[in-house]
Image 1 (cartoon, rainbow, N blue to C red):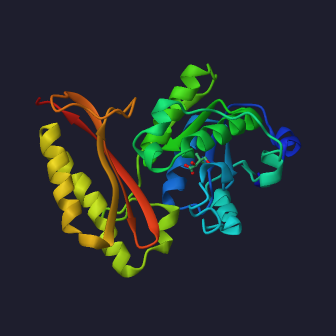
Image 2 (tube, rainbow, N blue to C red; image 1 turned 120 degrees about the vertical axis):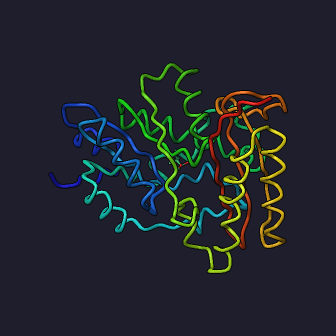
Length: 278
Ligand code: PAF
């Protein structure tokens, strides 16, 4: 079947076929990580819809909205290769009325960790994701674990607003040297890229420790070794569901999350680990 490109709600209605639908929301610039989300979606649903929309609401004025990579033709090739049924690619003016008033609040959980570094970001993410859910009406949706707080907040939104959609998380895909795949990696110079490896190195070193204190200390030391070319935003050891910092005696699952600027590029990464020893 030919790939359908839907630009609006009417096109989406026409594209709909019988059977289950999985949505993979993206901002385009698709890479191997997105391919793995699509593959996971294909295993679980009859049709996969990929949305490609660089959502202005989740960027603050000082962020990289205009610089964010837009590679729509290449994205369509990826979707064709991966057997996607339809790509939803709306224009910003069709998504957001100029006089729109109502949006989703991500609450306190959207204002900590990544949300503290990017005020308003998660309100913008949840607003667009809720709109995509209403427009595409999927049975399930797949998001990457790389954006762990985003995934946790989407699960919260689905629970708190009783949305009849199953949310699947897909593991982070990495380069052989450990760098987490990201659409923003293309902006890294060779030197930046070497510095950026400190993020995954810090997470690995942290994850090899036993206690919360050792994990924080070890990961921080690796980040410090990277020197002034790595501008750390945060290193946080948090509860995977709430993103609240875990205590020093925490036992059970935790997410070690990091965000840093390397050159002009902001990168995030995380690892999920289990603490057994208080
Ligand atoms: O993870 C992303 O690419 C975006 O935040 C999403 C979920 C597509 C919403 O714009």
